Image 1 (cartoon, rainbow, N blue to C red):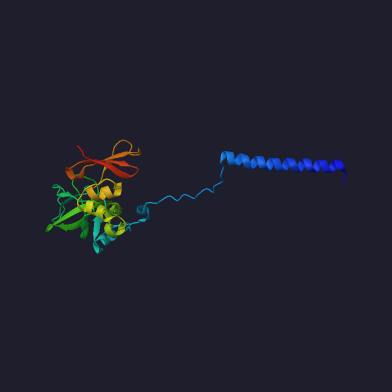
Image 2: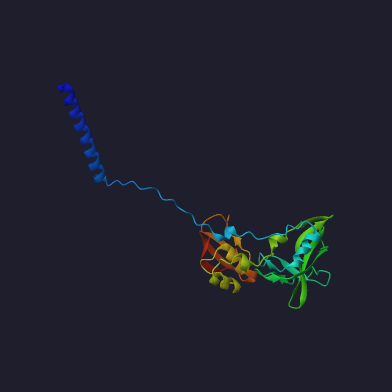
Length: 231
């Protein structure tokens, strides 16, 4: 190898070494570290995994399957019930079904309600030694619109939501909303609520009629943070 070629190799080697040293010093100075990004796992609310069974009734025969097991009220203080003789006494409201109230449906009947088209499909039950009935749908010209799946659970909510803490169930049974409860738990405690405004904001404010004892609840990120007596 000629002398000029050796000189070129030495110069190139020196340049490479200097570049490597400079890179190491630069990294130390800036304290650059390369970290593998960690996988973030998002916690899923166990309530999303609860899928209550439904009857999907299409006619009166299907609706009578409600008599084959106990049922529980889904939306407290929404459904009105009336004295049942028979017939149903639509003129006198007897009360409203309470949150997750357990009922034994004795029969399902169809009866015309005064001053309304078609007929009401009524679920008959006993309470305090008397018989009552509430609407689970309508019938007109042989066509049924039945809503029992939206009104009633056919499984015990205590089993469906057994992952809820004991203190939550205690508050529900005492018909109280406690900070930290979610909206479903609140509805189990004091019935259906009405969101203020569009109902899509956070925090979200919900007013609960609570059978004449109104309660106003603020939910932040889905959890109750403030509970006040409503108006």
